[in-house]
Image (tube, rainbow, N blue to C red; front, side, top):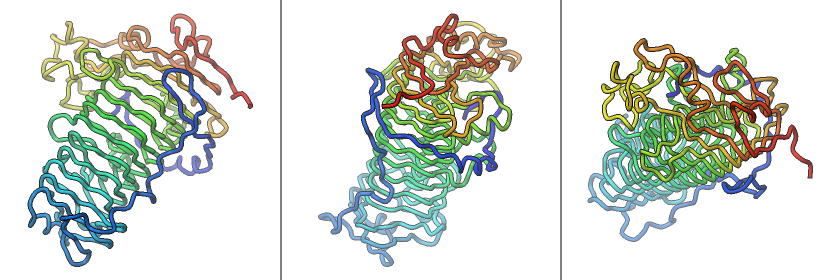
Length: 506
């Protein structure tokens, strides 16, 4: 959950204004080794086009007939490793809120064309339990009513599930949870009450997670920020303590909140070749986490609602399309990179660009750490980060999640402010922190963190292309810098970058 100096909920009063804003942009992709090209790419449309399952039961499969057979009972009756084929039609469970399918190890559930498992707004969960290596394919799962922060499919975050070619929509809570080694491929995760995916386990770390080729759209229909202001519990996908994730080839769009949100001690992420568009909040938030590559994505029409809300409220903070909050590269934590690389992406008509932020008052054991009870991956015990020990090295450094070693290069940033309905305080990049004041025993009082993130932590922009009236913030929110000042001492950012108010006409 993000903290700056305050948290905020969204105001529906902005929606009517944004409804008139049309974001018109071409779809292109890009590379990480050279400036962005115009190679066409299309979003991965899955909803309404999910691959149908087998019209006949696979050899040896248990046939499940709608209106006659109870899938939960059949699962209980058959041994581990059984394949169940759901015939065409609407399947339901018993009329109890806790009626659910509890798979056994190695079970497979595959749907015929038109197979639906319907919770009828009665059942909380569709598939639950801790069994390993479960596969669910070609099934529509709808109308389940999981509570907030709970999930309909793989409710207990069991490991090594394969969930592919399904439509999971119109449920409360999250469409699915994730466990270690999970494969989430080619699903339509649409219009669920909270998240499309909630990658979270009660204990331990999720490793080796693959999220590929899904359409993740229109989630957070229950508007959780309105229910719990500042909860940080909304969007398309939420990742928590995931070590090793490949998020590739997805279309993440029109979510009521952020698109992709990695929150607290995530590491070793590759977010590549996605189309992330028209989300009300940031396209990507990478928060109190480490070591990632965000590359070759098309990022279009995001954070218009959030950006305009900041302006309406008179808040000068640079609402970001990619928001890096207390996160960066850390060589001491093993990963495929020891930096946070943002490269080869094309940004089109988003409210703003990239904000690198560090809250001077947020650190392990601080009351301002909203990931309460959690410490950095460099410190074993929260209790170590106390005064006076925290005032000395190595704890003074290691008790902080630091925005450091962020390398932003070979991206293309395009904005037409008339298309996004912006008059001011949009089209910004930023690297900044607040003036440290709290708690009283904090060793980070004053401007130390502002100075560190801006000048000392190896955060750099270079070799990018800018089209539109881009301006820059550094150190704090007091000043907007023109490109020439941003490129000059003491900032020396965006060496080798190109700036133009308008795109060249062919």
